[in-house]
Length: 154
Image (cartoon, rainbow, N blue to C red; front, top):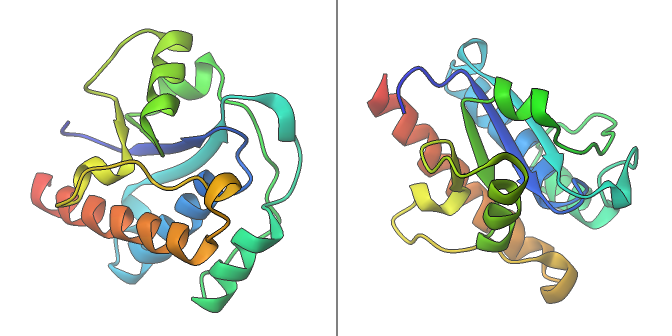
């Protein structure tokens, strides 16, 4: 997975986990002086939230942690975005299966975000757990692990 330039985060509707991951990743890349090296994006695989802003409970967590979050517009991943992405990071295994069914299996490109951590697992779905602090911490763990991976890969 060398030459990673564009990273796209994916969840179901692109209003909680994937935009949170996008903004957390942008924040930490900037903090590390790596923000000019990567293009970071997010999308969902369902159009159920098309055009909506980030969910207010997810935004509250970003605000608590001083992560900048401009107005977000939920969108659906399409073939062009998939093809342009060097790495497609999903939040959970069922997201991975959905992306693979939409665009074909490419295990070198589609990974769970927490696969980069020392404890690979799914990121909790806030729709079911209603614990946005937990979801934030899991995403942050994945992002920080990914950044360490990128540092070593380059």
